[in-house]
Image (tube, rainbow, N blue to C red; front, side):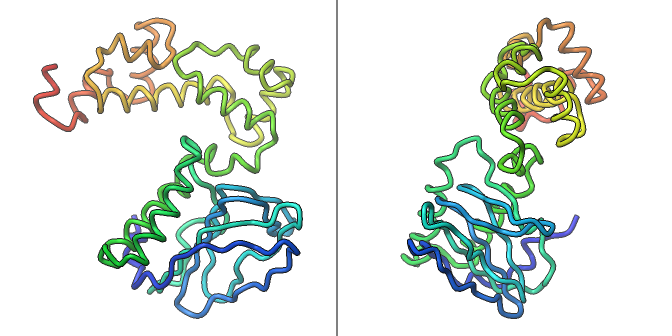
Length: 268
């Protein structure tokens, strides 16, 4: 695996930018050996993706490398605001796609992160190299998270609503009829949306999220396996064991013993 953080030479600038109300913004062309990352904190940006001009909102992350231009197209009704991070780099390659998104488990984290970084940079209370690693690793983590989070703002509204509903109701058994009703589409149309944009069925997606949640509980809590099965929405302990083993090639107890961080937790 390539060490993308090793490409950073220096964190050169950190700040905020607010587009004017008249929506006329002069783009900034990125100099050689520089990378600019813009995190949208409000408003709207029009940006070309695969030849089509698309609208992006809060939480979108734009990664610009040498020779490219920063975001500049906005609207008078919703001029954009963004946090700006300028890095001097050794490697001209971009670590992720040019447009990605903030992982929306907690939307307020966008404001906390950008404000914290601006304050730390300008107060000069933290080593710049340490701050550069913190900022870059945080942005990479959000950009590289599962595609359902990183692309959600570009999904059709019914699919985005379905993903949000699943995320909020992980403790429940979620019937597809309920999911379709919540998203205001038919079951066949919901299946088509999942297949087209995620390449899996709604059942497969729900199971993948349930199992991911279960793995986190097994490795990071002292809840019993029965409690974890319930917390993750499995209808029975037997079903949880069967599906967990099929996916992870080991039973839940073995997974817990393998990944718990402290020896003393293994006897809890």
